[in-house]
Amino acid sequence: MKSLYIHIPFCESKCSYCDFCSFVSNEEIKEQYVKKLCTEIRAKGTSERLYSIFIGGGTPSVLSIKQIEKIINAVQTSFILNENIEISIESNPNSLSIDKLQAYKDLGINRISVGVQSLDNKVLETIGRIHKAEDVYKIAPHLSKYIPNYNFDIMIGLPCQDNISVQQTLNNLIAFDPTHISMYSLILENNTPLFNRVKNKQIVLPNEDEVVEQYELGNQILSSNGYERYEISNFAKNGYECKHNLHYWECGEYIGVGLSAHSYLAGKRFCNTQNMREYLKGDYKPVYVEELTNDEKIEEYIMLSLRTSKGLNLSKLQKELKYDLLIKKQKEIKWLIQNNFIEKQGNFIRILPDKFYVSNAIIEKLI
Ligand SMILES: C[S@@+](CC[C@H](N)C(=O)[O-])C[C@H]1O[C@@H](n2cnc3c(N)ncnc32)[C@H](O)[C@@H]1O
Ligand code: SF4
Image (cartoon, rainbow, N blue to C red; front, side):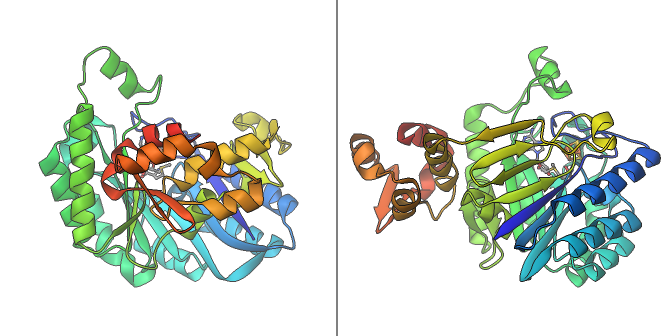
């Protein structure tokens, strides 16, 4: 079964660290975009069942209820939805409202992710967020009534952030009883305003050891409150792992629609244009198609699966990609097991829970 990703490239303002494909746009562009997006959805419809849908961005909650309704209608008339389909939407605390939550629920959206990042106003201001902690406190108590399966995104390694700030943010969010929390380490993206300020020494970021400490603290708070880490940055109550993300990490097929969206189908990766003017002209022909070689598929599977707590399925690798990791990386695996970085249990190899913070180095040894 396939998943569907729908990209909404609009935000109310641009955060200083973000290099996602998103812009501040006027209502006319948004309206034209939704129209073209619906045409693309109809053009890409298939008779296969969809396993999950993710409306991401950017900030989809900046669209009006009518616009989201048009998008969902286009999906419903173009695809067959699986009975237990997960339909997620990303949002920002200040562009959410009770009316929007009610409308999302009525449209069948059954998972919502709210970008909180921090509940520390000083941190929020430094990274250029448009919302304040008060906006989160205003909307959070209403989430469970409309969409009980909801996630908060937070970030660590941010300027002005210390252990106490991370601890308070997590404890205050956990008090709302979300089903899921994502905790991302800041990636300092080239040429973002934050990157330039750090380069010019106008802003100092927490150092690597401090970020590891924040991550371990977050992990400990989350696990002691019943949130199990199922991927490096993702924590969920039992049964509430994000199906859409799990599908990506298992290298499942997906169709991407919208500006800059990627698809992965029949071993090929397709990429839509990143140019809004071209997209609005109705050009959905991929600007880039790449057929993955078997070696690339192996590398991708090793990289993605080892980020999850379940780990890498040796039989799947053997059966689907004809690759025997135990033989090819015999020496490395032996060393990693002896030094307590990974463990092998039955058909699975996984990184030990206390070594997740060095997962990149471990994965590098195995690809
Ligand atoms: C594409 S955003 C969608 C949510 C919404 N636009 C918002 O920010 O509130 C998804 C998440 O990516 C994370 N993110 C964005 N830029 C990042 C960066 N440079 N490093 C780490 N995480 C980042 C943030 O936690 C954000 O909530
Ligand atoms: S982090 Fe979210 S709100 Fe901020 S610019 Fe990126 S997509 Fe938009």
